[in-house]
Amino acid sequence: MTVDKVPPPAVPARYFALLCDLLDEVGIGSDALLNAACLDGEDLALAGRIITLEQLETLLAELRKTSARSDLAYELGGRIKLHSHDVLSFALMSSPTLDHMLGLFARFDRLISPILSMSYLRVGNDAELTFRPVLPMTPQAREFWVEATAVAMVEQIKAALPAHPLSFDVFMPIAPPPHVARYAELAGLAESGAVKFHFARNPGTELRIHVRGAQLDLPLPTGNADLAGMAERRCQALLSETGAHGSWGEWVGAMLRQNKESQLTLNQLAALLNVTARTLHRYLNKEGTSFREIATRVRAERARVLLGEGRMAISEIAYSLGYTDVANFSRSFKRINGICPTHFRSRQRSRALYRPQ
Image (cartoon, rainbow, N blue to C red; front, side):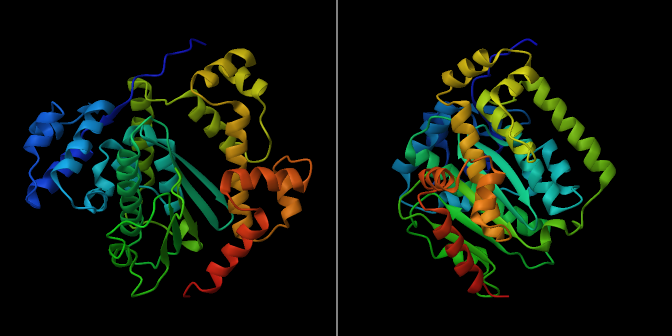
């Protein structure tokens, strides 16, 4: 197998065309920002256009200088719809179920943006969608994109099943923003309280959306198996054509998540690539990570879902994830999540008790 170099990061411009429209509508104006980033506003909306990470950082830095509004990321997220993702939109909207649609978001995340890596894990009636920053960005730019992503995902999930009440929690890796009251409006708390936002006391990096209940398997009103199949094949072809396959770390993480029944080893993954384990280790090391770090993170994701589901004892979860004893599992889980498994499960149960039915 020929090992390709990971392409330089670039972001589809279509989302920032929406941002420019927003700025013009609220009276901020986008011309000065675009000039600072050496961008053409009319060019942004054209199919296939991209902007570099440097241009993105410049655009957002100029925006902070130009406007004191704190809710522009929130506003941008509300404008990103299921039809905003080019050819991927057809696959998303024709998905048979919400579970399938969320899986497509993770499978083709590189067609949306390389800024955040998405993963999706389903266990029983619980599922978790996790977003992690994978590109070096300023904290301000990262928070902007994370907030826009969170709002966009909530809006898109609600749009996929407009006639059904939703039940999910959104764990934001940012402190409560000045416009935090707007999230009550977005979640529809006045009606059901089923969608809850949890803001971090100590800002982190991972955005997590935890979905519960039978809505995962409800048929989408726009579902179409034939159209979904054709759209997915085109999305897969686009990944191959553009080289947007992501980093080696992303690939390793995706493979570990897909193999829920067994614990893949570094040697097994290297064999799939037709390279030595030492070579794969070197690729991961160049990205500042390791197989052990990725495997630990993936196991923590699955642990959170299993703990929230509440069907297995903590010792059973530990052994099912390949830990030799509960103590090792607890230390690993706390190192990543900042809380031990017992307290995490208690917190999840408390939230379930107070969630309106």
